[in-house]
Image (cartoon, rainbow, N blue to C red; front, side, top):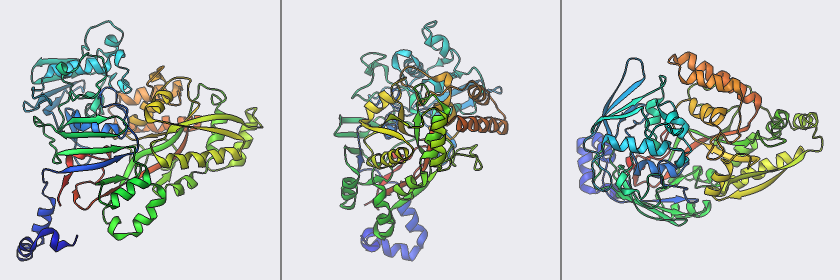
Length: 535
């Protein structure tokens, strides 16, 4: 579509007469209406804000269930379902004034009691919330989870429009935690049972509501007609087709049948060079430094991976630069668990080079001179995962480790990878929930958060020294000292090698020219509510 036919002759002439600024303003003014057609490689596990803890599921959940606050275009907090908030001088009390315009998808106003209900629900052991540990700093959570109280004492509703959180210790990241979908209000009367998982109903106060979810085939969201928060949506409908393979998604996109393709989840690495060489396609390619990482979790509770020498052998055996090449140069090799965009990243951290001879020597030192056989699980929804795992498998074979490959549907992968003493090795990905090192180190390596199921610490790693550093850093209000504690913890983690630290991904989003405001966000890769269509 050429520039003139897109804008029309009268508008084009007016712009020439009045100056180029008008063109920019007209181009950037949001428009309501239309449908975003999206691809999903596989189904999402849940649309329950107390249960969903994976991409791309969270991208849909966060527009069905909005929280009190959200991010601006950077990492500053802005009101969403809250009108304003204050923090006490000692950092222990957060008081929110709710926006009286906020409405659930059934039209009822959101009140403070809804948050009490939702936090009690989310943090009950009956819900098996995979991110419950993120909110353990709220006063009364421990007693509530132990059955010593009927409600969480640290969450209070002194009036319908006032909500108060009382913390055990100051927490510089608390607003980040409150911005997550887990902290979103759920409409009580729409649930059949308080602790049953939300299936195919809409019980949130976000800008969208669920129209249909045909599992394994399609999920459709439409605008919530009652929405009254501070973060409205422009597009009328989100229509995602489930089960589209990489190459098919790219063909559909180039035929104009899809509006957006995420080059991590939707396009094979082999396609990337062609896309960059094709001006008509690459001009609609958005790029952003990403917080997403890929890694191998080595289960430290399953022999012989309970031996640090064996885990180090894994690290020395794998050629990370080859993995970067497989991904078409869309990633960088990592030395530790923190990506470069996260505060506290250490550019001089010593990791593991590709030294297969050293890997063989470590296996011999561990009493395994002839190697051993183990297995890896990974999600089958991303086609690139098969190529990455095949490369890892070949590298390990060269040093005597036979890696049996077991691709799984995403729900099955989550169940097995997060269950204790089940999966020896997991090929896994992680993207930050909020921009802080605790969301990697505390969430993924704190041994005190290990549980029998729904555990985010996929290596089931437990080092008491690391646990103490993480606990001390979590309550520190001295930013410099806090980051130094996390850096020390990271050094110990790398030395213990509970992961093979693989690659940090670069976020690329390919969109049609009529889809606007698609630039990836550092926390949320896609913010569907911010996009609009201008044909």
